[in-house]
Each structure stands twice: as structure tokens, then as C-alpha cells.
Length: 408
Image 1: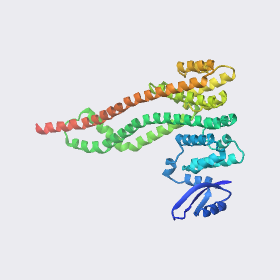
Image 2: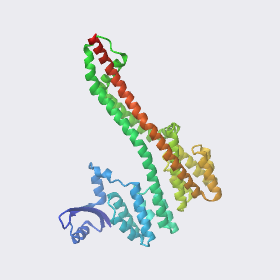
Image 3: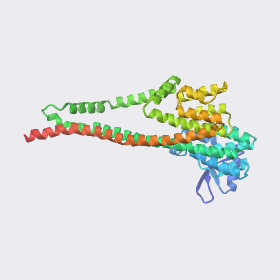
């Protein structure tokens, strides 16, 4: 059975479209005709995706599958399973109410594979862009333990917390970035369009201009004449940085530098610790073996230095050591975190202790992001005001001297 994307006209003469599985395009056309829909276009969903990918379509970006979308659907699936609805029927019910094509396609193909006898986890593996490895492994553990509904509920909570953390970090960075871009645009417009017109007045001024005005004119002339060079240098620098970070050695040097940055490094560690603790706690509580859980958790940290520490911990555990000892030895994790993990291991309540760590560090991340935002906003405004004020001062002072000269 294949998945088709179709378009047509319904009985009221209005356009209609959707995604549906069928034996063939002919069978789908017949099924749509019975529903009063005249199909105008039917093609396999994979071919449709390739065609759409070649087109510039803003809706592709607006309809991306987000973590919150997956969390919502996961919670709905858990509710249906807890109510005793069979898995294939629950997946069909989920598919009927989905609107985003990528998510609808993923669940449709998943349902078909489950209907053919595949496990839910194996069916989800084909859609790594929608369902990450942590999702698939938790589902596999839930199926093995016979507690799939409970694991899905826990997974939905986990996805919600991850999306919330990501939105807080992203939201804290957006405003300063917007201010920075706005400042660059304003200063560029002033230097390219305003300064040359004002400084043209100085052409007949026989007195020597102040050094800061001469510097302003020189910078303005350079930007006006060589703007293409500046754009090229910035683009080249961005491309070079991207290539540098794409190499293992470059990525390691970059991540090490980020961890050493004042304030920023501490925030990166806090976010990573919160993500590490919550992910590991969720996986262990769902029945995923500790070595597999550490493998999955390692990939969600986003920093090679912290990833190395977790990798060393995994290797040490394989040799019979505890989790806390190698993490402490790496020096990348805060002492309080390794101490709480050690206490959790000794008491047999590692999952609960990791949850406490995640909650504590989520709170610290919120406090630090709030503090950084309160500092960054006025700092950016002051810098912008200082730059624009310096430009205005450099242009106005000679004009005041002209007035004094004329008045004299």
C-alpha cells in the first residue's frame, strides 16, 4: 500500500486536497469519487515532496513539524492507548486530525508498517527528522515492558520541557540580535546617505576640520566606495567559520572557546546539564539500559567537550565504574551535579535525583537568562546611542563653527 498526495474538487465545487494511503492511484480516484470528490491530481507522496522541494514555497517553512507538535500527538496517542483503543486504530484516529503534511505522512507510513506486523519503534525509525533517537528508544522500551501508554505520556512531558527550554533560550537571544541588526542598518544608512550630503557643505569651508570629522568622512567614503568588499568579507568570514566548525578539530576548539566565555559559558553548561539530566532520567525511567541511555543522551548536549565527558562515563560504566566518578573526573560538570548523581546511584533513586537536577538547573537557566536579557537590552541601546551620537557630534561641530565664522 502506497501513500498518495491528491488534489481535487468536492461536491460544492471547492478545492480539496489531502494525503491518503491506497493500493494504487486508480483505487484512490475511485474512493474519492464515492465521497463526491473529483480528483484532478494524484501522485505518490514521495514524488510530491521532491517536486515541492524544488519550488520556493514559504508554507514549507511555516508547516515544519515542531517538538510541540510531536508532544501533542504523543499525548493524544497515550490517551487513546490508555482508554483501550488498539494501536492501529489509535494511529488512524491520530492521522485523521493531523494537518501538517510531514507529520501526517510519517504517522500514515508508521501505521501501515505496524499493520503489516512491525513494532511501533521499528516503524518510527524511518522518520528520524520527526522522531529523534530518544523518542524511538523510549517507545521500544515501552513496548518491551508492556507499558507503552505510560512511556508515551512521560515522553510527551519530556518533549514539552525540552521545547520550553529551547524557546526560553531562543527568546533571550532574539531581542539583542534584532537590536544589533537594526543598529548596523541605521549606522550604514547614515554613513552612506546622510554623512556625504552633510559633509559636502564642508567643501568650501577654508578652516581645517576636526580630526573626528575627518575620520568620519574617511570611513563614510570607504563604506560608500567599498561596500561590496565589506559584504564579501563578512560573507567569507561566515562561510569560513561554518567550514571551521564542520571539522572535528574546529568544532572542538569552538566548543572549548564557548565554554570559556564569561557568562555565556556558564549558561551553555547549565542548559546542557538540564538537558542531560532530564533526558537520562526519562530514558532510565522508561526502561532503556543505562549504556544505551548514555549513548542517546550524549547526542543531545550540543557541545563536544560535554559529549566527550559523557562518552568517557559510558566507557567507564562498561568497565564497572559508576556514572558520577568519570563525570566528576572530566571537570566539565558542576560538582553539585556529580555529587547528586553519586547519591542517586548509592540510594538506588538515580532517576528521581536526575529529575531534581533538571528542575534545579531549569530554574537557574531561567534566572540567568533573565539577568543576561536585562543587561543586554540597555547595553545594546547605549552602544547604539553612543555610535549615532558620535556621528551626529562629528557632523554638527563643524557646522557650529561655520555659524561662528559667519557671525564673526
